[in-house]
Image (cartoon, rainbow, N blue to C red; front, side):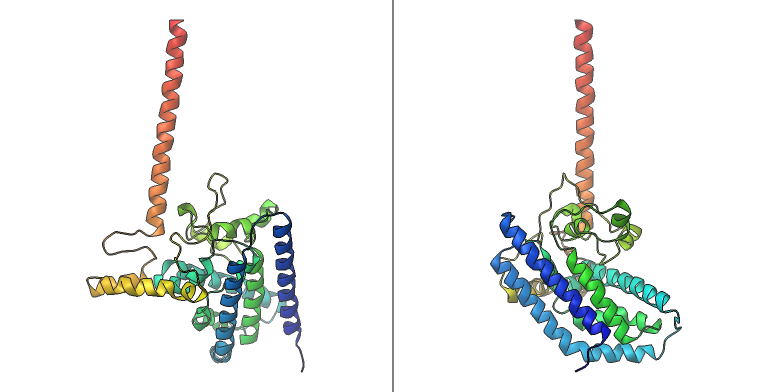
Length: 320
């Protein structure tokens, strides 16, 4: 059996991630950080295995679809360095778009929710895969084939960026240069992404570059005054691996059934998570707007109280 350079690179990169995971586990245990629990880690491994099975089952179809579209490429980049630079940048942007759809369209959120369902955040959380994503991910990457990138290179670029995406799933504080934090996704950025705090919902979608979020309005810095709580806004009572995969589909089906009109049924499927026909639940953007308004009101009250206190002190000084 012959191994290509790409095969060796992927194996090496995955091995590096596994070694780092074991190191993080050790330090978590040694320092009593409690970043890992046995049940949560096994659930992560189960979901990763399920995703790998679906990946393998769809790999041939994915490859041939990309190869077929490659025949109709619009142009071809001959310079190898420029080829890989454009491929990585374009692939990372399309992942940002795919990821954003997974947060803003409830049907896709029903699949992506598995990745956010853990109340822990560690390197194995990166393995807590969106199990059914391989079934539709290829359609988001078809533009790359039309841009003149081969199927093999597209899949390899995805694997490389995915490995980087795994590495930012850690609670350990790592101080990066400011320029790096401005350009690339860091653990701090991704901690925000996995938070269930209202302020942090649907933020920092990037895999490698955080620039997409900065440019398209989905960026949020980690704030020391808003301590992160991981998981979902409403955690499922049954945290078994099967329910973790299907619980949002069950909830979505129930909402569609209770919708009074056909238009409302369609909106439950394609509107953002939290949308409801009767306003009983709210989408993240509305909750974030309400949070900002409440904080602004509180700030005004605080400022008003400070002014009153200063005036009172002046009056006392004058009376003295």
